Length: 237
Figure 1 (cartoon, helix red, strand yellow):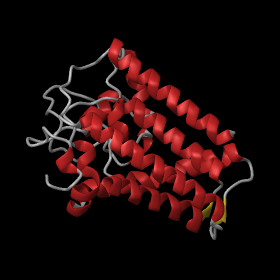
Figure 2 (cartoon, rainbow, N blue to C red):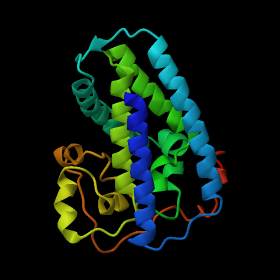
Figure 3 (cartoon, helix red, strand yellow):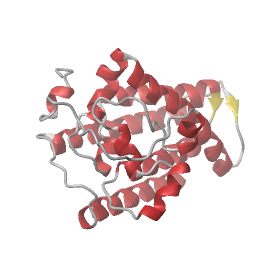
Figure 4 (cartoon, rainbow, N blue to C red):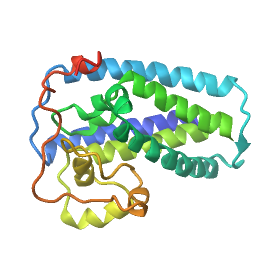
């Protein structure tokens, strides 16, 4: 029931973001050809990965160190640890050419930005992300399925938020020092830029001096050859 409630919460947040993007859009983007069909395919693969992962999590014994008996405290602590590991994994996907091409480039290929892009990832990147989560939560630590679900939902909600194409008031900017906001992730997705705003939790970027807000002189999203979605699945681009 706990996991079901968390998944429902994330689904509601995504639907609200999707609706608000259509009522209060921040930018008018042109969606690349094949994006929606590719997203449906990716989400189907992601659903399979999630089922396999939670089946394994419940049935495979852990060898790591337990964090806490309370699932809420355990989930919060594990999310902080996971976010730090994921922060460096994200930086590595940008810094290492082979990781960029075969794992993360597809996520940066869309010619638009909205909440759907948060889940737009190559299946190979999903597999690597799942492996990182499994090693961290089963081998290094001993984390319950509830805590993992809580971690993934927190991450999913924050990712949905900072990818969202919603026009926000200027007074919300200070929130960007706590969690990443949409204008910051636009900076991260700029064409040819691999420098700033890697984490949904802003303090990691702030700690390492690479937290940035949007400024004039915006360099557009995507790549010059990203007018079609499906070639990125085959690593043709």
